Length: 232
Image (cartoon, rainbow, N blue to C red; front, top):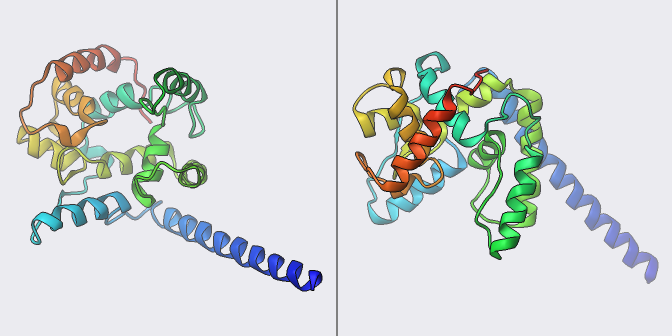
């Protein structure tokens, strides 16, 4: 009886591990494909579209992919300065930022800071839900390692700038530049780029043309740091 129970437990564990391995392989195959193909959509984009269609069944996303060369260096520098100043130096995880975020959250008694790198943010946007559970964070970490191993830093940044949200249903640098300033992503001036970078943590809070005290202050901070940002 006991032997049969242990056999059942081992079978369940084996099946669970096999299923986990298949899921990880599915992630790897997608990332390999994206070495020279562009993602048509992401898990986050699909979730946002579903939400928008709950209110308007005809809703669509504003999104137009543009290559790395057609995204202004100003925007690349602004986003790196705002979101991940050590992007070229780390392997996907900024341990100093993670430690500082942990201390800050512990002090506040709730999650107020994340410390996520651009690679971690991309892992979440491409494949995962917005849940804050331990297993989702573990999966995010695994996908981050895959991204850093398979893709170049330049490709990671290119995909990131093309899939993050910059307004309700507005995704990617080109749609953001057109939506907020009526110009292509290639033509963004430093102040415009810093403005978009300041929006990244809460993109749906601001409408086109929004000028809040927070945005203005954050924009000036980002502008002051852009010169030090190194591009891949």
